[in-house]
Length: 293
Image: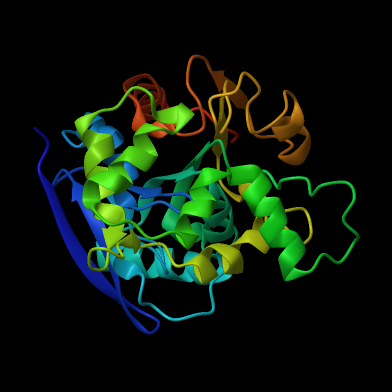
């Protein structure tokens, strides 16, 4: 079993919590999605921890970093990631960004290319299209509706409370994308639960998810990930394990010109990092490189 530990580093307003797999080797920074936490990368950490140091933060407003103050947004997260890399002895040879973590990774590469070797963008980082009925200047309510439509139950659970830990696990067990339940997924779910029974709730603050959401859509300028070598791994299946992925075929190529796109078969938006097949595909790209020069 790969050595795993946790720590914290100073950032604006407090301390940022992170998990680490492995103790020596090149640094890999792994950045999670909009309502997730660092344990989403436990399968990747176990695969790579013998040869790399895999460091994965709880982003501002999530996990054990949930009490870090606003503002949120990709620029704030990028600044936190740069501080983390420097504190743990960077630069990072590879930055892996899953889902919203892909946007954080591109923002970090744009702002601080000196601390980033290359990017592995995992089903995230290409600006999402807003629903066509929204205007050019969508409101926060519009963005919230778009987030709900995109991430579905992952967003709705932030408004809910749960009487027991098992009730929270049951919510995730019922998620169509997580049918292949594993001990790693259960540990991820348990870590996300905070508060006291009967009003347990997700560690992800809803205002953090909303504060970050605008940066995920094509309503603000998006930094180019080609500031450093990059590759985009696209999940074949979607957020709810539907046959269509979160991104339409060909869409990432149009949004991220010059970045190679590879479709990972047999995985959905979650299992591309949380399942064994997806984690191995990501690990292979960390190991072998590939990306734009």
